[in-house]
Length: 266
Image (spheres, rainbow, N blue to C red):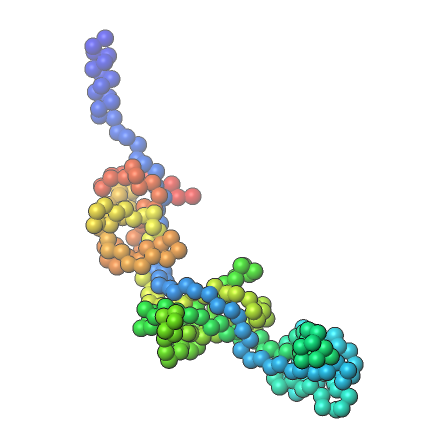
């Protein structure tokens, strides 16, 4: 009985554990950046308002949502002083409330929607960062896409009541998807850098030290790293590993330095 027990303990002690299964990711360059997130209301870059008397209109009033060219007649009037489009755009109309400016009045709007502007307020501590030309990403819950824009201009002074500065974002709207009046979330991009990065799950932090495991010939090797920016679940790497290295991104808990691993990437 003692011989059997001794043999069991010996086998248990010297048995080789199977290599842990891991998933690896290639170290590649990605775009990392910082951002300022705020919101603002979409406005047509160019807009014109016309007021007309309904009893002076000749022909059909069904003009809303029609696109017109510059110089085209929007509404023909009996006195011959027709409403002419000052620029290419989309027509809208609204009735005047009873007793306001005369109940017989009609407001006609003409909007150039190819470009949309959004005025945003940015905290004053970002004044040194803001500059014309910075990229912007614009989203709204009504859309499943992100619109691209840029900072067009910045106010010359701080608003003392809000301690913020006004900036204007211009957005391409050539598909006429954004409608004036919509509340848009705006993300102003700055400090862009194209740098190697790894998934956040690949990084282990112990005290003041951060490290990853790279894999060569199925052997894991611990590498201390210096981290930079974080974006979209990835961490930029300033130093410690190289582009093209393969890092362990899943299954790290059972890995030790210089241990053998089994790659199980799907």
